[in-house]
Image 1 (cartoon, rainbow, N blue to C red):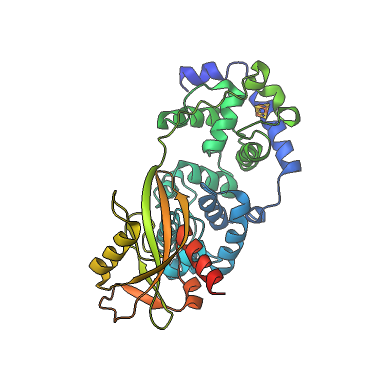
Image 2: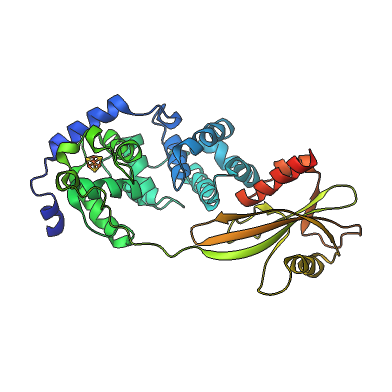
Length: 364
Ligand code: SF4
């Protein structure tokens, strides 16, 4: 153990802390579908879904995903398009792709049994240190740290760690602290207790210290610094990207959609034709030119349907959505023409799902 962690844990009563945390967790934990049993595959899927996504949002997705792909084998054998469709709306679609390719590796190399070895599990695609720690501790009872942003917030307050949690180097400190204080008897309840504490008591703003089961161990509470921790330097604001999109109908009322490239942002998802706008020039003219260049068609813009923003971690799409039509023949094969009722069969990113919704509402 490094000197820094020894100093941080000076006078910290690990045993009593474990006892207080675990007994609170056992009494107060929320009923969540992935807690029904300790199947490592279920734990794995839930942890991947929960990355960057709220519990309430994940619950219906998780239940549906488990009905569609209840086992490692079922997910390994599924079509990627069906998996993406089941993931539609959760965002960060590379999570779904990585999950499926890792599950295929488990099916092929480990006879369908999720490995319980830290190195083997960490080598699977999309399984970072947090997910590996969560699966190993929750499903297999192995005392490995599962440290994500929430756990770093909670620990920074309890132990009084004034390191910038936005820096990758900070994770090492938090993992080392967790290795030292985790319960060897019940690492599953310990890690889940830390996550639960972060979710319902030690929240980012206004933590409920007066109701906190580990208040007597908490340095931030003792010093009154719970609102100042964790230290987290600001990320750069997402770059604004103005985009014109068109819900384009042909003479028979079918809409033009296309599939995004197989790599990069939102890979392989479907979308309405769109173009990133350059400065100067009318938006309508730019989308018309795009359709002429890319699809060799001349279109009529009928009206502006909506404008809204969609924010990713690094980008902010500023979308202006038009409705339009064209009469001629289509010359290209890189897209599909689909009836409005078929639109929902395709996996769209969230911003384009909103457009589908607008179309369905405006067409009645
Ligand atoms: Fe968080 Fe307050 Fe509990 Fe400390 S006492 S762990 S700051 S809720």
